Every structure is written in structure tokens, then in C-alpha cells.
Length: 192
Ligand code: ZN
Image (cartoon, rainbow, N blue to C red; front, side, top):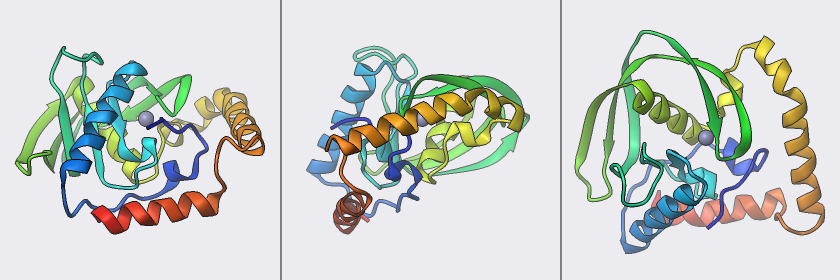
């Protein structure tokens, strides 16, 4: 399992709801935490590891054995309140940061990995991470939410990511769009 980088097409794919959880999916989720800790992230959406299904994991401490691990399956956000601008980054856009305005407070409803219903009113970093990860499931990246002025400042950086991705592809390190799409269908048939 590997984190895919912008502009990998699965990052732009709208993930489908999860309809079943089995031992394999629990194992995949456990691997997602490992991959996230290795990259020192606080959140990771399934499509960031090329799994086109509606779930993401969060641990605000970004370290194994510390903090609390959360799995959000089929998450829905409601009751947004306030607005706050903070710097964000993303494991699929390493070393790139920029200011993003989001509601300060939200309610999230989801299912946990054991099928339990989750409802939580979140604020601060937790609210921001959940909104950032939920965006991933809809194919939205934090850079899409930056102001036009701030976007100008990261234009070159995005261009570099695109060049790097193209050269990885040329070297055979990344499959073509068609093959990636076919893999997604296999996962969707299994879990959605
Ligand atoms: Zn991200």
C-alpha cells in the first residue's frame, strides 16, 4: 500500500459508499494507519491509497500507540458553524502548504469499523481534518479551496508535481488511466 500523489486520477474520483466490512477491509484500514504514521500524517482517505471507497482514518497525534485512532465510514457532515482560515497540507501533495477557509465547527455522522454509529460535534483541528478528508472522498483537494490569489503562489509547485507524475508514468512506475480505472472497479464491486 502506497500513498498516491497529485495528479493521480483516483484523487479526483468520487468514492462510493461502503456496503460491507470484512476481515480484508479491516486489514486494509490497519495498513492505512501504518502508511499514515510513516508519512507523519493526521488523516488519510482511502482514495489516497488508490481505494475508491468512502472511508478515512484519523489520529491527531500522527503516531502509533499515541492519541486515538478513528475510522470514519460513509461520513456525512452537517451543522457547519463559523469560518476560520488555517494552513493545510496533504500527504498526496508533500511539502506543499496553503491557507484554506473552512467552517470552525461541524457535526459528523459516520460508521466505525465495527459497524457502530458515530456522531460527533467537532471543532478545531479535528473538524478541519475531517472536512479535508471528506473532501478527498469527493475528489476535492485542499488546493481547490484556496483563494485565487493564493493559488497563484502554488502554481509552479503543482506544475512540478504534474511533471514528476508524468515522468514516473513514462518510466513505468505508474499505470495508465485505463488500468487504474479498472482496478477501481474491482474494489467497488467488492465493497460498494
Ligand atoms: Zn489530503
